Image (tube, rainbow, N blue to C red; front, side, top):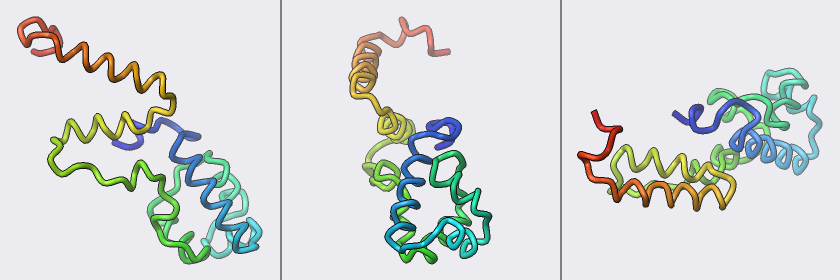
Length: 130
């Protein structure tokens, strides 16, 4: 579902993760070549990760965490780590995840207006229901 929300790289998630990798690597005073060797990848792969050009696999994140001495959660964006309210239905959680991935505040306000408009439609008037 997240890939549907995020779209193809580079996207908000891959760019964030790439920035975190670069920041941690530089803090560790490590070259891309050194990091690549530690995570069993090529230097080009590290470069592409840092530039948000590729999705980072779940297998790679623990290797990055170990090599860069960071917790696994360090590499994930806050909107992914943020807990969802337990009382939300599955569809409400999906909507909230999508909303959190809208970068532009103007678009966020537009989404709120669209949803507010939809709530005023009566079920029998709603053509989307089958």
